[in-house]
Image (cartoon, rainbow, N blue to C red; front, top):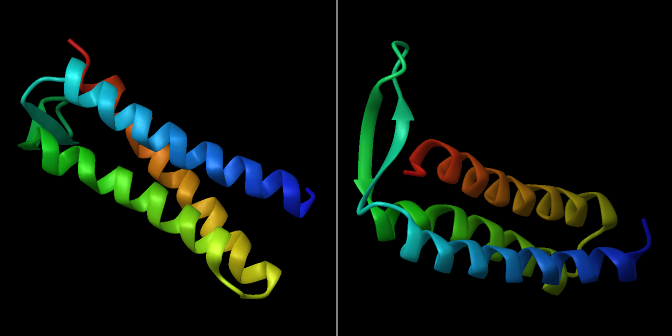
Length: 99
């Protein structure tokens, strides 16, 4: 993928992280399940703001690292893909906590 396209995607990841965090604040319950036990029951919960801050910081932090760093391409690609992990955490959080 060309560098310009990845830069656009990295900016899109930042925007998606902000929008998902805002949607989570509005639509998710006050205590979010962050770990599910083997029996399928809720294992551990966290306050909403703390639980939403983790994937937000992962996505935005690594996307900014990708955009601003003067590294070689292999190292920048790691930052790009790690920022997508934050979005995946958001998706799992919405799936497990939607009521």
